[in-house]
Image (cartoon, rainbow, N blue to C red; front, side):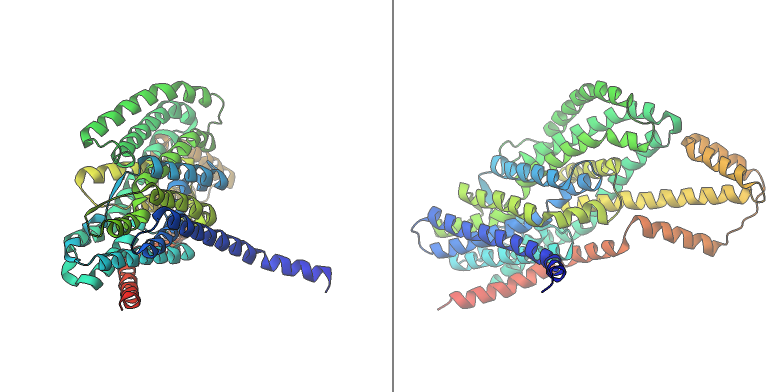
Length: 523
């Protein structure tokens, strides 16, 4: 065989080798969980069931790391504030730290109160329900990750518990009011995240990037305020969500402590921003540099809070199974042994390292183009939305909030680009018949003008008579081109579809798995 043909075969099989490596490492982790749990459990009744459940929990943790963590670091990577490798390292460290330090000692056995455990009288049946729910949630997350769709891990496990619970105890076992709240969050989470992210981006544009020659000077005043707001939001978010299991406090106290942190941060960063403004270019690229470090901090804090708060999605059912087997009864709360928490924490880090890059790229680059300012708005919206929802008692998904924020800034960019294109067309219409150099000079002047100066220039033009050269149909087609370029509709439809089917598909799969497990375990 010729050397050239050998080289072509090696290139063709390179992707397959990488995939086999990732699969092998994931299987190695699951086998390690099996051996570790077998030693940790010791000689107890039905210890084999607990070992199997631990393996499923490890599989679930891998899929959480592969799918859900992308929402925390994706915008920072997409904006090039941090490299993909750096983001994976930061997220892995802070996710694991959040899970181990602030993950808590006790977890609810029935996530979100979705079913009534009192109606499951048999201890064995309860174990089968939890195993089916955990495996169903993990399988659906695996499918969603393969499809490149960021979905809610909380909704995945909730659907699993719902489906397995109904299979075990009938329709009456479900808390349908809670199910309705979760369904409402499919709309509440992304809309709230999108509106808040778009609002902050519009504020940044009005106060900084639309100021023309005064852009850098405006940034010197506004950026410290924005960073202080971020410090307030993330401090409050961390107290309410990330540390709630080791130090619980009321909403007002958390808000006051967050405000104090923001106040301190403002005076700390203001001199630094003032020094940086003197050396950065007076344009958008220069202003973007001011948001790089806040974005990296946001990614780390989001990862810590996610590890502390959402690790229960991986270890909650596993802790419930462990408690049911060791105690021989079903309870509403279960202790989390250190080995169970370690399975969740390490599994999330492994899943992120092996399979996380695909979803990180989806969130960070494939939905819409992000720079540091836009990514900053997305991260800030994620924290503020959770704070608002916590105070109002609204169910929100961190995944839906973050992805909704990305779409929010994308759609705002579409609107602003379309509006600007209309302004340019109006200018060209009113300069019809004049020298091209004169038109180009006016357009350049318009481009460099501040927002107030642009408004005054357009007002003067409208006072004159112009000839419209483009028809309404042509203008509509141009508007459609801008929308297509800035937000990918195919990704929008794929993600929305995945969100809508997460709970029903997880529930159906869990019901089928429950009947399968029960059929194998019954004599």
